[in-house]
Length: 627
Image (tube, rainbow, N blue to C red; front, side, top):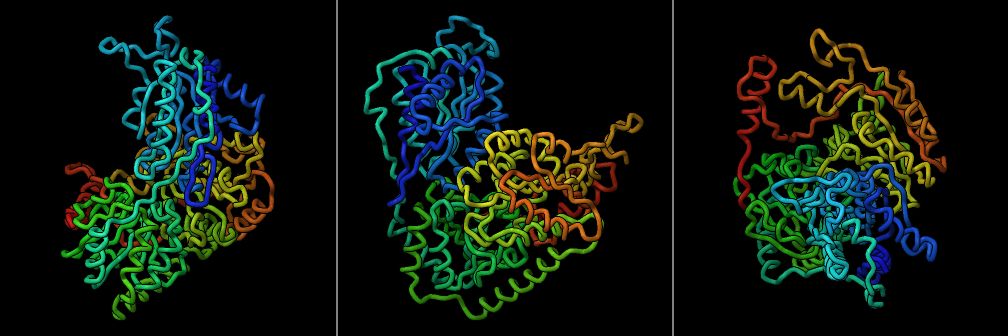
């Protein structure tokens, strides 16, 4: 076999096992072919497709970055038990995947990358698209994957394939180590032959590790919880990847301890649960952030504590606050100087906590206060989601209409702009896997390919991709892939005529929305801040791909017609783009969170000087978290 033939067939026989559940580790391979991989990986996929079409499904894509986004969307929906491989040609094809690699690693989600590399023999050196650096001839563009990958290796000789492939699978299936896994494949080595042992091609099972909490660590954590007057659970993505949401709900009901969620943890608790306070941090709710401010113990479960979760280290104001950090990865368990790390699986630890806490409950006074905060925030959300009758709706109204037309098992997908913040506050999640917001890397362009990955992983669910025009323009070409495969997603395209989120942020830092509007260039002012809106028709763009497009015109009943459009799209068997215009100056409700974006310390702009004063005031609340 060639190296490529052996690798592709090897990948087709890898299985992830979690208890009684067994599924393909690599469910398929995306590929965009060029001279670097058409005779290697491309030929191997063609040959296997001819011999056994279902053994390793091949999928086309239109952008290499989008291949990795689809893999990540799939992996998250499969709770990290399965993912996809992405094969690219040398040079620009490979480097197009770098953003996807960073996104996968930052989100702790498995994705297998197979970028082609230049000749290992250097017989035709330099080849087309080869990077040449005089100080290091052996360095190629693929070395840029090293800092972005949880595992990187290059198959320089055919005999290296076995150790490289097995090591890659170990990292892909390790919950503490997983992320982007990159196997760099020189274009000549891909086509070289070797004698392959049959055992390399046999079915291999990778049993998922679920480490139990050590007794000493658990005892110390329990003592802290029993002694806390105002504990708060912060549930992250690790709760969902461990399938621990039911255990978490039971623990909250047993003890009365409130739960707040990170962006990745959305869905860990249903929105109307008595102990659920909503999202926490910079994009959180007032209920969760009031609890975080007063909490004397934070029980972080499966969270990486991003700056949005900690509100740039302003969320936790109790001078005596301590952190119990439950995480399968020591790197995250020890964050914020925690003296109470529990390096273990989330589900196993929550189970052990429930057993150890027995009849322990929070005080009635604390419970009453939590109920008041929750009730107050629910009223705020009810108002925000309600139609206002404006010609152009605000984003909150749009979210309200889409949510009202959705079913509990539908999955909302988002990644960048102001939508993640509003969704974190306003989207009332009814299913553990119903909230899919990529907010570790917050990559513009993720939404459409990520949503397609979700649909591949859960074909029985409707996928509601909500995307602003700025992010849509980054990766709309992947709609062609949806058309080619008949892969249904529903895209709610919000036309803001610019970067709504960064426009707002620009105002808060005193930069007056400079460079954030989609306007014609004004040669007199040498800026894009004029009043001539670009005549771009994004509905026509989507329609040109062969997509069904529903254009919701402005008017006082716009949210009602948006509701109808989503209902029609859900009834359709094909992909639909719903185009709706918004007023980007109508903001969602404030959740009492803050995000540290530095403001110029000196400026001749009055707006920047005013913004600096507010920034200094907020920054004074920051504190080191050393508990």
